[in-house]
Length: 269
Image (tube, rainbow, N blue to C red; front, side):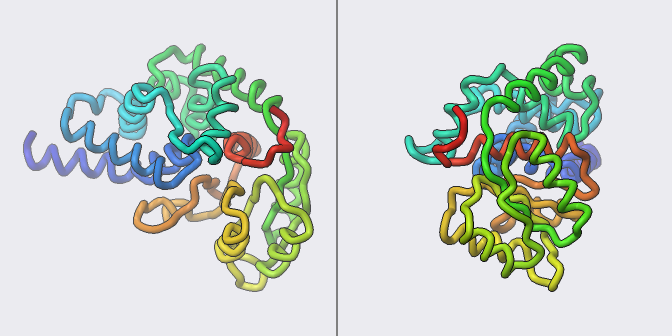
């Protein structure tokens, strides 16, 4: 491969790498595990350039290589017997194969059904069916308590409505870091939905970090207008991330995925 071809491939992959990290983290429920899968994808492409299908869009080609690696491991979520990964795997074992992948690809990564089919090596119609199955299966699998940290009233109300319609209980809405900490002490949630920048210039990240210092097993979904800033792989970053402006389908998908990583025993099995 010539230097110019190498540079071109690096550019094509580099611009889509943050989104691969987002997808991989959502599948595994972990920044470290997700980023390891993303790194393995890059290594696979470097060892066999032909695995990167240039007949596809760069993003789809990159995700297709990832999918081959993910499938070869059985979509494993390695973890100890009592950890989040082990509990999530118990839930995931009941789902139809490739449904979570299809749902994330279509909603969070905004791929068409044809693109989803290309990544999963199936047809457009089958990809559409997988997403429909995913919604049905995940809707009846788990429900729990959700805390919302969001200072914009309209967005907070919208999130509350979406989460409520999914069958989850909203413990409350916090507009600042202080309110978030007080709300958490009032009722422990199974999941946290948090904006990054809050009303009094406090940080949703700081609030979540303090909460996780007391209960590290609570999954968190961050909502931000600048997702790429939290997908560098260079420091501790979120496992679940939604970009603003979001769609209802993206919130539903992210919440459903994250709920599988909740360790709360009150969740419906």
